[in-house]
Image 1 (cartoon, one colour):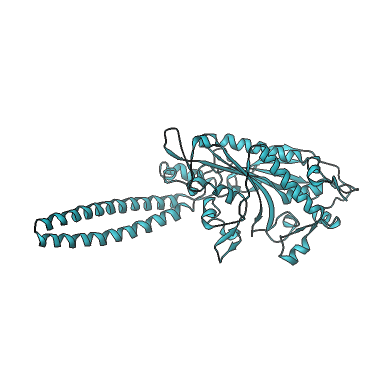
Image 2: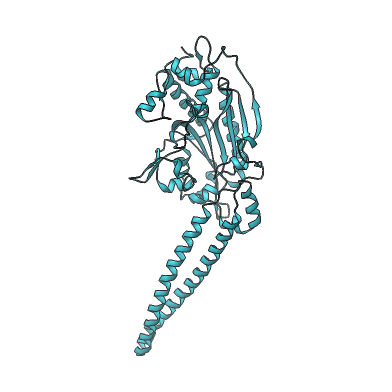
Length: 423
């Protein structure tokens, strides 16, 4: 969440920045200023009331000691009235503070200066394109037909067991899933990321900390009896490991990686864009997370982008890297790069990774801080990236590597799969 300082130091600059995300922030910031001023005024009155109450309480003992009982009783009545007023002011202070907090959290993060203007995916900027197209058989099959032909993914069985968007992987399909997860984790740990295995259900505080709540609560599966949420990404539990933690400068960078199944309700409905593995309610993903000093976070972002690119390139798939425009960015992100691989059978680009810098936006929600060299407490920066999301990688691998003999497995995966072709 944005800080009051970010919003109040230069209101018009804040309005301009949020306009890039197509948010009309001026009336919201005006309301925040009003609430902040009210909160400060109530706090000042409460402090004065408590000080007066303490002074009067001290006088009571002195008056009693001097035998001035009537004056002492009058003071007692005065203290009682002050206590009543203090209680009223405390309630008012909490009400205003709660409304102030609730209003601030409606505002998304500021986009970085290099974020392009734009409304949607069509306005994203391609910053790199790597073409490595293969010659496919005549009339190449989309992955959902290949999955049925080779009996490696059963979409109908998933519908029977749960519903649409919950596929069942079988035989070499299941082995390919496991191979990709292990390969991605090994790539990440070799790059210095600590592997963790977090819960796949989180509490409300964790959802708030990384910005999923209250912004995306309708997109998350909610276990209402315990008020737990199924994770939409490992970013949520992994980043929250450092919620309410104060680090030291020497602790940075903190680098973590995790595999989890991910659960999202907004899978879509009909058409080729959501068919097969293109959009699921449950899918597997390996995530990387970094905590960084503010001055080093964009260097860290560049390093994460280069790391994800190395993994994508190793699979031999055509890919491109996009810098997202303001209208296509997430609520929490300051700058995001998307990776897309090309599906030659579907003739379309499939997103397989987003790598983002959130600057201090998540850290402010998480109360994730560090002490600098002067022992002053500062907000850290947080970053995360998909490394990688499996469904569309699998879709592209199946489609782009189909041959008359079967589906070829990329060389880097063969030690993990134990086979080099799906027949």
